[in-house]
Amino acid sequence: LAAADDILAMLQRDLQTTRHGQGTTYHQSGPVGKSELMTGVARLAEMIMVAIKEDKDLGDDALVSRFNESVQVMYKGIRADTRANQNEIADSIKAFTKCNKYSRAVYSKAVITEGHFWRVGKLYPKCTREEMALKLKIGVYKKDKRLLKNDVKVARLLEKAKGRKCTNVCSKGRLENYHEELKRLGSYYGKCAKDLEPAGKKLAKLEKQLKETVKLDKESAGKYQVMKDKCKLIAWVMNKYKCAAVTNLHLGCDGYGACWKTAKKNYDKVRKFVAREEMDMKIGWRALRRMECFLGVLDEKKDKAGKKKQLHKCINIKRKDISTVHLNIDYMKLPKEPKCPRDPMCPCSKMYAVIGSKKDPRIDASATR
Image 1 (cartoon, one colour):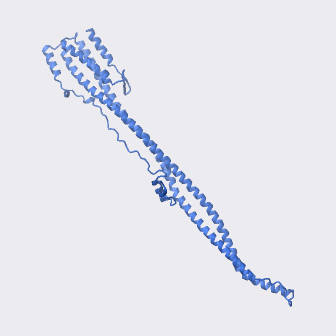
Image 2 (image 1 turned 45 degrees about the horizontal axis):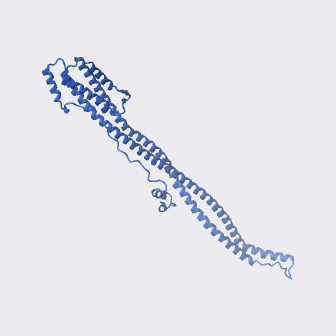
Image 3 (image 1 turned 90 degrees about the vertical axis):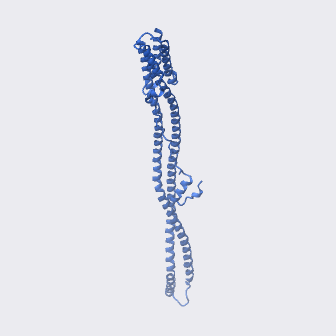
């Protein structure tokens, strides 16, 4: 009797577990179902079977009560382990949520950068239109400057040709006095000046126009260069934002993919372990139910016929007669791996160049690799 009591006490000590939060910490790192719980159930079943085969009471009903206490401890252990395993599954599913949060954080950052790109992109077409308009003006001014230079050259030649008609008539005549000479010269050169006046005015007007055109051409060239540099700066900022957005999405997709694979690997590992324990827990539960039945055979109040009837009842118990539905583990639905949103329109890509060429006719999309 003392030996049996010592064995039961040792069995109960083996079944002790330490709970921390939602997890369960066992004295061994291996699967509890195999190393502790199932071992304890097997030992308890062996002790009960030995008692039945020897047809002994093992003392009194107090020992049967100790057996029942051990069974209840095992029941509690199975229920606790089932809850812990369910929590393990839930935690492994939550790991996918962390991946989604990481993905959303990276995607939100990329969206903000993409927004900067499109806002700056609205300025770029306006800038290129202004640049092209200034370039056309430069062409017009250069053409006008070239034509005016030719006109000035022709006007000077015409003025010079007309000026040749006015020869030197300053020599004094034999029969004219000083007063008559001045009158003659004044009349002659006055007529020459009158003839040369239209050509002189035309030349002065053309020279003034040429001077203004040269000034406008120089100003337009300066404005064009400033606008060109401005458009280049806008394009550089656009490419910078676009590269940052594409890079963020690329890195985010890589990080999300690695996170999802890690979470999936952990889930598969946990599920495999929990499925094995679930099977062991159900086996242990059914064994404990049978043990409760067999403990009725050791009841001192029953006679030999009653014990035999109880024994046959226990032997005929079928697997389907013992429900283990409450030990079922919900493995939950595994989240589907979503497609990561990658941006195909990165700078220097054909798509980027084609869209850019619609905004800027200077871009040759066919020349882009």
